[in-house]
Image (cartoon, rainbow, N blue to C red):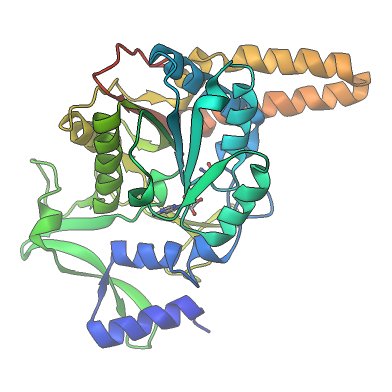
Length: 366
Ligand code: SAH
């Protein structure tokens, strides 16, 4: 039985012809009724995947420390906008705000804005952030541009659709989804339009797959525009490449396992790796300062995650009977390992930052 979303897509294809991979990803993730993020809570052990904030409070605490530091470097502006894109369950923001209680003036000055398209996840975020004044927006365009802004996004950029292009003897082709003979969805290639071709790197090889993401471009440009106008900084953590790369990176994950991209459409998470070199160049052209992209491991360790883990372990020893403390300590060690070990999230995940010229800032961790 095709899923409801699959039936919707097959009807679209029957009426209007094959759809691009990007449009397919857009529907699969964000269709208002059947899209992956609209229909359920995908996070955690019982869900499909676990993100860094869900692994340990230490992650959010490090991001919180980074934000407080940059806010101080900016001269402690009040008010300022604290803006998170795609906050999931709201765990990262909750950890940030808990840490920020220790920074006099920060919470009073922060106007918290969350951009989240899924009503279901907005509800989760409301529960996680009860007691704080938070404004929710479905689109980034709805966030007011009033004053200095600090923007964060963890595993947000990877959830935005990509298109795949390939140069063949028939010119540039783009990946499309069409209906097969037996009425299911199948991958194919169709002619690519100039708007997509113009996003490709200057040098390309025939028959290799290149990914471009107009959606990521738009978000990065919009964030850079806000920061240029109002001053501030942005911090994005996600998996991808520091140097431009080619190849197919689109992947589907369900219940912590890789599955076929066309299998049970709308019921698995679809993501693609980020090409950070392209995004860096893009925001540099928007007059942003852009330090070199670093690994999550390097970033979190420079910010002091090892020290923080040690503090939590010491606290566990004081607080709990020995056998419970031992258990807590091994949980803290395991979480630290997942976040920073090179064979876990440490090297695959990268940290990308850009900020305005106006302030003499030097963001921590780069
Ligand atoms: N930052 C969270 C969740 C990452 S998953 C964490 O680290 O746990 C991606 C998040 O982005 C989800 O909350 C999803 O609903 C949201 N999202 C994806 N595409 C979006 C878009 N175009 N606009 C707004 N939110 C989006």
